[in-house]
Amino acid sequence: MADMTITDLLDPGIADLTAAAASFASGDKFLNQDRLTLLYVLNGSGATRTITIPAQKTTTSATGFGKVTKGDYVRTIAAGKPALLGPFESCYEDANGKITVNADSVTTVTAVPIHINKTTTPS
Figure: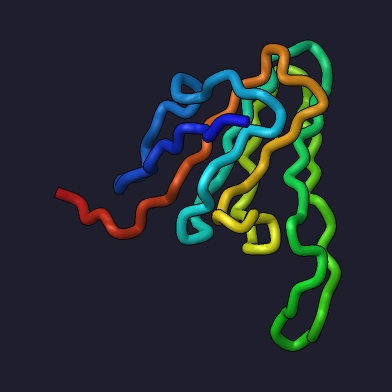
């Protein structure tokens, strides 16, 4: 599958996400930069759609809790509605630090990963 193009969200934090969103194939990936990357999804279809981010590591340690089990990150998006998913913990990253995006259908569904760029200073 292909890598999705990431949009940097720069200070002051305004971006046309609908225009940046593009078609994708189930199984496409994006780099989870600094764990500050969100996924904007626009469901342009007439039916509810399900987006699944599969857990790559199902057992992880959580401060104060010890070992915990993590499941897939699953969200449903109503017909004609946008959704902002994430941020994503390291348990959803593959060995290359990428997040896999699966969808029950990608017909008329678009998405764009958004990196919150905290290193840019306003001019």
